[in-house]
Length: 383
Ligand SMILES: [Zn+2]
Image: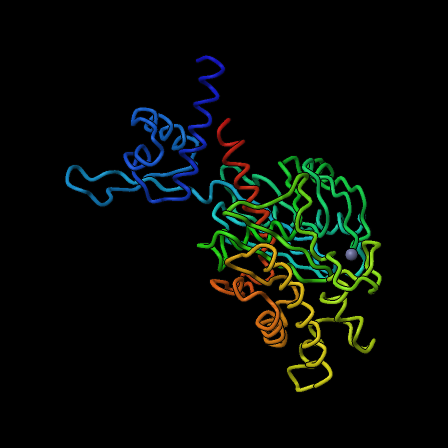
């Protein structure tokens, strides 16, 4: 084969594997039909994929007349992906199969975030997951990490204001430790992908994912594609300015949305005895009116920012996720009321606003999906 033919063959193989993953159970004939590849090509690629244990056969399936076809399935346990969400006050680490099912989970609250501390927590979590995971043909196929900051296309974390990090080579450091492909992505972008693949917005085209925690990030999916901007820095709407003479923000500017509508804005307003979102929620649940009023205020501020975003993008789905979604019961109504009262009526038509049902898993599942995509498009084709 010439070099060109090799490339074509590898691309076709990735395409066939992707199709089997998305459309399983599926027959060889259907793969040929959907992909436009001829039956001989499909047949030889399927034979390779079977040998590599990336797919398996069962049969016979439904017949449309003639001989009943053997059906192909994606082997979701051929290997496993690790998805990690580094928050400002927590680290969540999951092991998923190749279709995003969570098999193992490690979760730790943190209150100091120097890079050296966080990387040793992350290293321990990954190691304990590797020690516990089931055996498989390909083991860990990669590690995806979502971070609350600006990440360039090379995977360098340029700035994570709420962690106090600049120019962090997390990708390189984790690759050295574990010798598998590592993908670093902004946590809100990853969360948006998590929601699109596994969450409530699977059938929607223009999705805005609001990740509201200690900071606020926004993941933007336009026409089914993640919108990353020129250099991958899109979605920093936590720093859209809603008060030109406003409060100081960790980014160095003033009056940013996240200084008013985030978990840290909420905690700034409470009595110093209350040190967590969870304890404020239980106060509200026990009828504490001060706590309920605070959630009302934060919900209203969230609503104003979401109004700006809806008026800008005219999305069909807005999903509110990350830690503030824990307070859904207390912030949902002020968010909805603010949107109803302020958002352009045209933009409210055909619009859904809802809270994530993946809860804390949106980002982890999103980065884990990036890892699986990379494995299928870049690695499996070279096996
Ligand atoms: Zn800011």
